[in-house]
Amino acid sequence: MNIEESLKSAVKSLKGNKARSFLTMLGIIIGIASVITMSAIGRGGQENITGNLKKTGYGKFTVYVDKEDQTFRWKYLLDDDTIEKLKKTNEFKAVSPMIKKRLYAKIGGRDEIMWLTVTTPEYEEIDKIDLISGRSFLSFEYKTGERSILIDHITAKDLFGNVRNALGKTIEMSQSRKSVKIRYTIVGVFQNQFEQYVKAMGGRRIPRFVRMPLKSYDKVYDLKTNGYTDIIIESKNPDLMSQDMAKAKHILENITGVKDLYEVGTLSDGASSFDNILTTLNLFVTFVAGISLFVGGIGVMNIMLVSVIERTKEIGIRKAIGASDKDILIQFLMESVILTGCGGILGIVIGIILAIGIGNIISIPPVFSISSSLISLGVSMGIGIIFGVIPAKKAAELNPVDALRSE
Image (cartoon, rainbow, N blue to C red):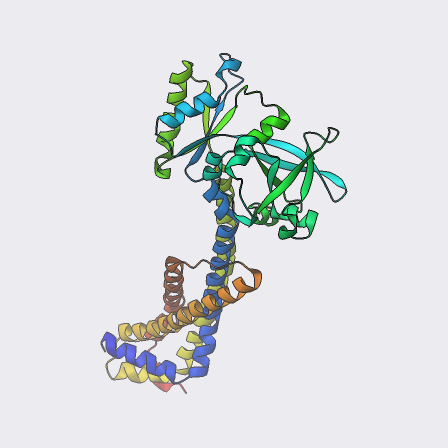
């Protein structure tokens, strides 16, 4: 009996008992569907949570002055002249001062922290925000120091009910809880990109954010052009960011004539670390879901053992007319692999449908992987071989005479 005849015989045998064949496949179908669903939803959630964070930091880095260095002098701070020199090198896509401060605003009857980002036109190009209502700063607002600000959508909803109502309204902020609050006009509302991040970590208090032009900050909080401790730079080619980091440090050292005073750092380190945590968690959840595959495999082995007992006389007849132990072994292995392979294909289809349905309900678009689907199918067929060997071997080792005598 050749392979083709063994395959035909295996398919015919499975068709002879369709209900049992389907029930045998059910464990594999559930296992594969669980793996595909959990994997797709897990990847979708991971991308939803960290996508914006990674995008924000991709190809961007900071340069800051190490004020703890023994050679530090206040004259070595990064000023507008230094930034202009960096721009004129034409080595970088954009360069801007980076100032982040903590302000206080009255929200819900209490003073809450607002994390301020002082911005310039270049900074807006480097650290883009998703504006969902209103407008960005106009060119004259950067030059004249108008008290215009952008706030995040969560703060806008808490203060004014919805993002649209916030436009044109004012909010009072101060550098400390006790200092005099200064009134600012809201001209735009942007997406708070940390919303999903905080929720995933189980936090309740989502940080609040505000942006204002550099000139506005200077007029109110008296920057006095003493200089900046940090600047932010975007590479022309994100893949060459490491070289650009070294290049920026070298240029600054040449400008000031001081070595080892300036340090560089990437913006995506936190997002990458959190992404690694979510990847590990996703793999663990997928592994737990995959345990059901082995449960399904045991079910396949159980049914195949029953099938061997029921078909003992058939096996004896086959051996009597010339079928070898190898032929019997191959036939039963094929039956097992066909069951798990078909179950795997159905499981993939059902898993995709479930992932899309669940994703729509919980507002997380699933992310499917062809490699994961192929691996799942390969695993299911591998389980068919592993758990089909024992029944197949038992069938192959039957004594033809004893098999023919069986009832």
